[in-house]
Image 1 (tube, helix red, strand yellow):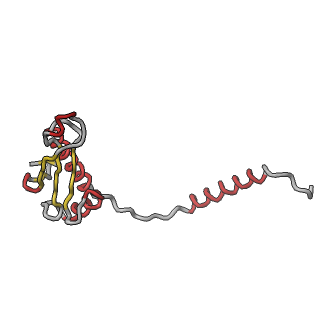
Image 2 (cartoon, helix red, strand yellow):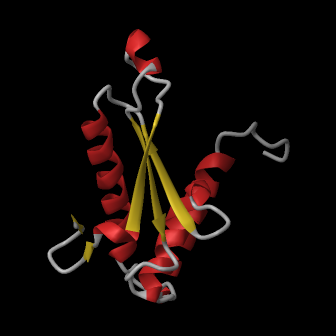
Length: 139
């Protein structure tokens, strides 16, 4: 079981891990062992709430396949177990971000005083800039 938060966890049967050969560090040994991990998480069939699934799809970007499967690939370490942990932690972090419901923006209007302050500062600034020019001929 993969614990996301105190209230949310993912069962092991909801995602699959496949061990593949990595192209990263490992020297000659890398050609003989499968130490990279490809983690697949089916978003559509998961036990997450629908709004969380929608946010997870949006966060996944190009890592989400056409059949609604999130694919995470980890090969940063020479150790298979460390790569498994990294892939699981990346999945957990994505789900944690998706669990966060964004606050709805309520549109507001600027106050009359703030409009006046803005116009006053524009007037002062234009006066300052007009003083920088060449003197006019009519003086």
